[in-house]
Amino acid sequence: MSKILKHQGNIHIGSMHLQPNGVIGYHEAVVSQLLLVVQGEGFVCGSDKEKVKIGAGQAAFWAKGELHETSTEKGLMAIVIESDGLENGISMMIRGQEGERNDYKSG
Image 1: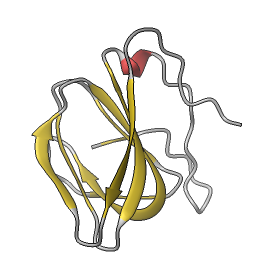
Image 2: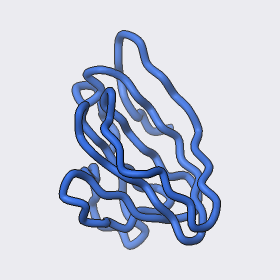
Image 3: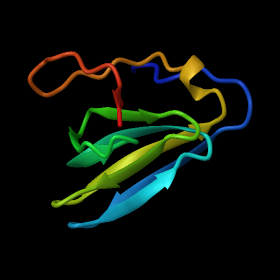
Image 4: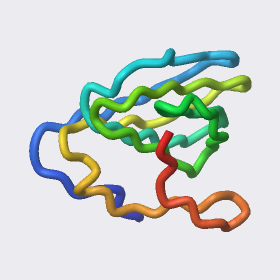
């Protein structure tokens, strides 16, 4: 088992299922958010609107107030963790399919 984070305080953990060609439109993160893709692939972007490919086993992090979007052509499933101050407790490292190091993709 790999530790994802250690956090004290209120935290919200949910699942997100996007169908093919699904989009969670450009919006502001009300609190810090960690998106953990567990199945499928898609794209994330932040304030710069530059789309970054993301797939199963990878994560994206957005700080409170950061504008961002998630989209997919083929569909994806992810776990979303949201809380104030989340960035202070993240302890996981994500490795891409080719073994490259991708600590956190900030959109």
